[in-house]
Length: 197
Image (cartoon, rainbow, N blue to C red; front, side, top):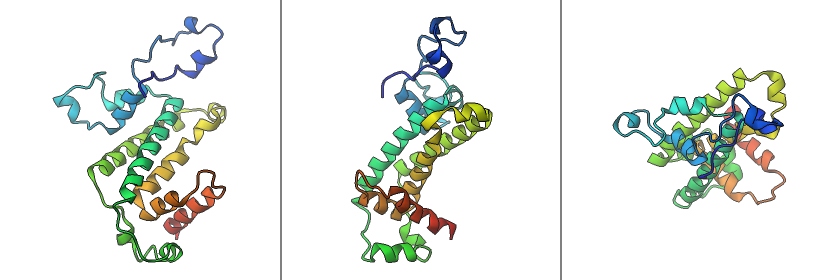
């Protein structure tokens, strides 16, 4: 995570990248620093300036779609690890999982994940990520967006991350999935149906 963020796409694709007007030898921020900025409190900068000296908004404004895609993957991995550890201490339900999903509305209080300081920070980071992703999406032309390739699907990682931190059932579903599970999407759709009912 200590690697620098990748150069902008136009520089990468250029036959003569050093001649590009927006060429930078270094982006002056590492992936780790960008990840930490998602969690940084706005008020903390006044009391102790960060290493780069820029605000969260200034840092996010410099991130590309690829940068943002890499950040949501890091966030997802961080959330998945946290929720996996949290699942070991959450009270186990004695109700079969299929019945749990049917009764999810009635047991919404019991299905909520207990709040902790890490989850509160994760919620802030996901909110910042989503706001920036939405801003990037709205400022990118439809032609450029279509050319983005697979990393334009970062929103899906955000959606699964949101499910992981809001519903205990989502942790149960993800914990039961096998590595090469063919029906992952179908299992995750069950969680979305509960929200849409």
